[in-house]
Image 1: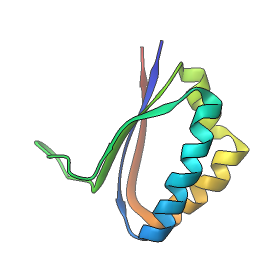
Image 2: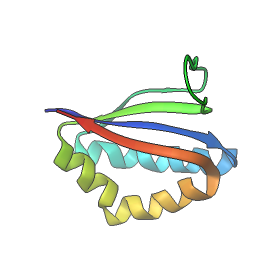
Image 3: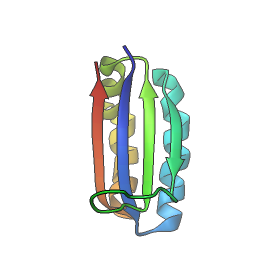
Image 4: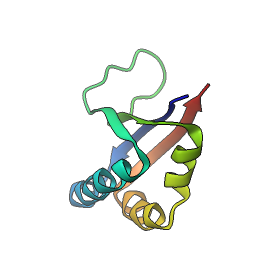
Length: 94
């Protein structure tokens, strides 16, 4: 069953964020994943808005976790943590 990362955050360093996005784009195909959407114009109908909202789909939960826990993503994650605030990653699947 597919697994989805539901992601939201606020960008604090645009150049750092662009580097992060570029590196993640290279990593995702190695795990059969793709970005379903990434939107900085979403409408918040309840709760607190984030600047960027995205959904990334993986073939299954195991590959999603393997990607997130990989050494390569740990390095890329450092870029994200230094260039965004209020980040939330939620993994959802059946």
